[in-house]
Length: 157
Image (cartoon, rainbow, N blue to C red; front, side):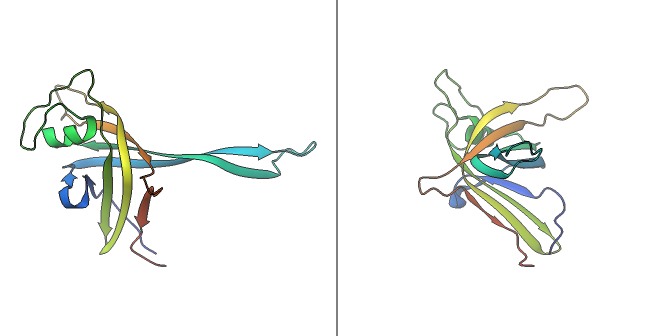
């Protein structure tokens, strides 16, 4: 058994061309399942429960703002690595990307790899007394082989 602590690091893109979301402030991955229940007679509690649909969504907040990470999240027109700005047109849409979250506590590494993700929201607040910390949401889906991702807990106990 291991006890993981803290946020860790988040990477987006293929393993040989990953972009780290710098100064990660927080990340959340939510697994949700829709269910069907059957009740018998006057019983108050269900007799059986089945899961028929599942989804995984995520949110991340990070403080290091750069054009490449925004391009990975929301897309852009004619963007090349090293650019400092994005051009967004009415046909711009987010491409799919791979996400990897890694946290290490007491030399035990936990890794969550999500094979296909697509951004579905991006927000940031500009205030006089606070840093700008973009908050983006994303939805995870299966790749062409039907694989959604892997969870490596780093400890077999």
